[in-house]
Image 1 (spheres, rainbow, N blue to C red):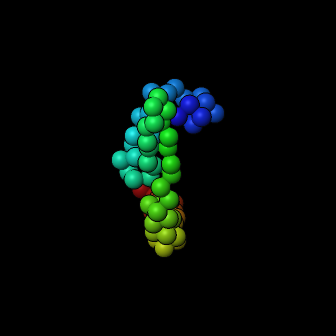
Image 2 (image 1 turned 60 degrees about the vertical axis):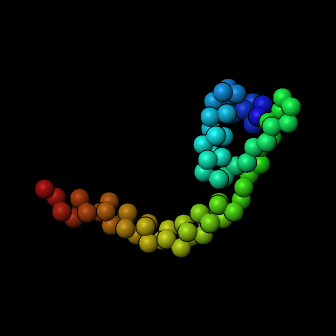
Length: 76
């Protein structure tokens, strides 16, 4: 935990909270051995998310582009 927190200038309690959220999301696993806590990235959910974004990203981007141009085309 200290190795993760130090470069980010984060406190250990803050890092613990962030990692707890990632762990609940299934993105990180943690294990405690003695006084040390070890963290590991769980890649499968990230691959699933990346695949979904790759599949739907272009569609969503087009829709957002259309939304931003709407006020210009339809002034009140």
